[in-house]
Image 1 (spheres, rainbow, N blue to C red):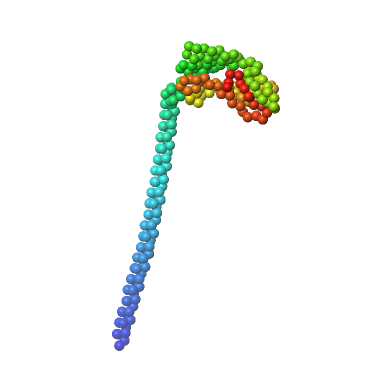
Image 2 (tube, rainbow, N blue to C red):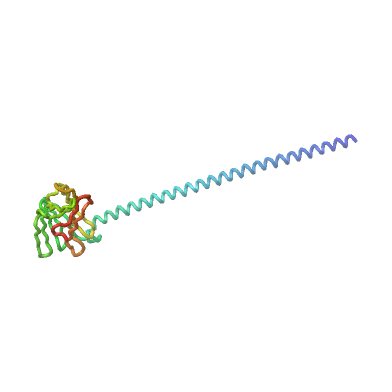
Length: 220
């Protein structure tokens, strides 16, 4: 009986060894599968990140290209606008020039010149000509602290004349201030307006507490 028991023990040991070997193989396979899955996921994540970075790079490149195109178009438009005449881009064909004490505003049909020293005005409308008188006392009536004062426009201590252009009317803008007896800032525009080149005068006052013009000579 002893040999039989010995053979049985050997057989059981071999079975246990076989089972142990199978379990080891299964464990190794399982670990290998887990590592392979991790590597696959890492590769997918890396590929996704590369794809995102590529997409972001392409998007940035597209934005840079779009900005460059817009800049080129803007520069081209600016260059074209400089070569177009005023009437080609919709403005009135009126020019403003300054020589010595004279400001000349000239349109196709009408024109006027302003003397910046005495504010005399010469007007030409086709063959007709008018010469307006220079500034004199009583040009402007101002209400200040419940009393009315008469002023000479050219007596303003501060006088500034600049070109004025809105496209549909062109001329000069005059800033006047610092009269000796009243605190007042006055803006006056003299322009040729519209296709008919109508001569227009527009006085404007910067708001003050105690003084306001009530009448200007030659203005309604």
